[in-house]
Image (tube, rainbow, N blue to C red; front, side):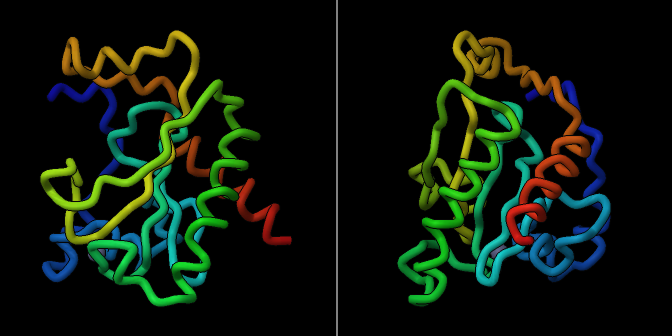
Length: 163
Ligand SMILES: [Zn+2]
């Protein structure tokens, strides 16, 4: 897989051997790290950008605890997840005005989970005529917007909702 855009340094995560196997857990411990991808931390979940996004604004909602399935979440976390997903979708709508969304989870390796030990809900904004097919055809991902810029923009929108 050729990456056209790989500005993100993940040395701060791999520096701690305990964290090297799960970047969701590492991100949860340092949500405000300047080189991180977290845009919002709720009580039981974090919202973070995907390092290898399928489109601008590709976000993931993941629990702070290392859990393989939402079935393992406690009642409070279960009650938080869906409203947080909808809030994140609303913020993406405001930030990017997409024409559609792919929303969902891949649970377990056979289902295509990239990190099978730590579940995460994907929100992928989609546009009419967008170029996601490039990923399949050319094994090249097109990432036209800088991730750091996306992060600051989305963090500001989440912070505004907290006020
Ligand atoms: Zn984890």
